[in-house]
Image (cartoon, rainbow, N blue to C red; front, side):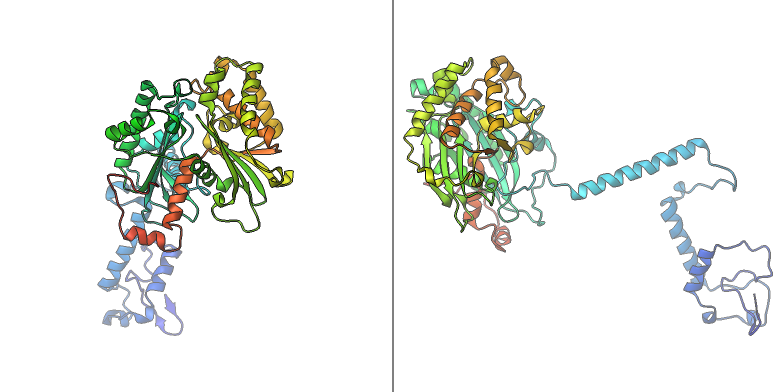
Length: 515
């Protein structure tokens, strides 16, 4: 290239000068990079070049190696590492073979598909979801789910590492509830303030209180079923690094003559030391487990837990200064010595007629008549609602939503109007035992109990009429976990990490059992 001011300018690349027609044309992009990398004024010229020689100029070795490295780097980026991935390009004007073009299209589609999966995996919640305040993540009992339940799939998942969203392992807490009808276990770890994440769960219908109303004793078959379920719970607790646990038993063990002997057997065969709680504690735990479902606009709430052998009712009045623990707002509570198991055994739960259903409602109404609760505690209709936590109300919600199988995520927290509850109860009453057992949200294990629960619900609705009712698929276990975590202060700023650095305990006998 001739410069009118300074004469012939040597080539920076060390190739032939501009008069050499055999030199291949370089792309503009490549020239730009070279010009930006090396300035012509910074090149040391040889004597021959300074004299204007047209022959090949020898390029400095460092520049040649840098150019080669950049060219190899671009080749690796575009075609992959290794010579086996580099193939010759098709001649200009000639298309690739159809087979090769098809493979290229498939490769691009697969890369786009995998990129979408990687992006989804980055934002997806971990196996144990974290949701608003005190959730129970496992669905209802096994009999209500035709397909494998989420907790069964979670147990089968390999290499599960329980870590919260803050990036460090949180302490594990466990809560076990042995009721008249079910045996339930929940293992969770605290996350954000007022929330926890479920790591493992277990639920099984054991019917511990079967025949208790007639004989006053726990039957051998019922105790055997319960011990087998408790062995599974003990194995889950043993394989987890549990910091604190509370294991409770309710009405069946409270009322049975051989309740103490049964608890001793449980201790010998499973190593679990169950604590029999009183009715007041049971009512407070039910309220603690459902506190997040009470709306901010509510001034008063009646919360009820229809169990297998007893039913707890708590009247909650919320003032201007709302406590972080909803149980502190309980003004009145009662525990009815009737549940779905005991009521269905007395009146017959398999073949229920409108007359027998009315008889069950009347019996529960008589029990509620002795509950001294002033009417003025309940505010205006727009400030008051019911909260139901039991298999009865979750079954009604599942039938109302017409679910193909029970789904806790869709049931927990759903609102039902008074007319919808009435319609669902009338629908269930019109079904015979076979039709109830065939419904995926009821199943054969609950088909003879659901109408007895509806009778208890109907008596509660007559005593406290409400325009709406909120469904809670949660209860005592969530209340136990919430209370233990709050007592330990794990949701206070900095306390969570201090507990983790201090190490976790894995006692042979779970701690935290109240006397």
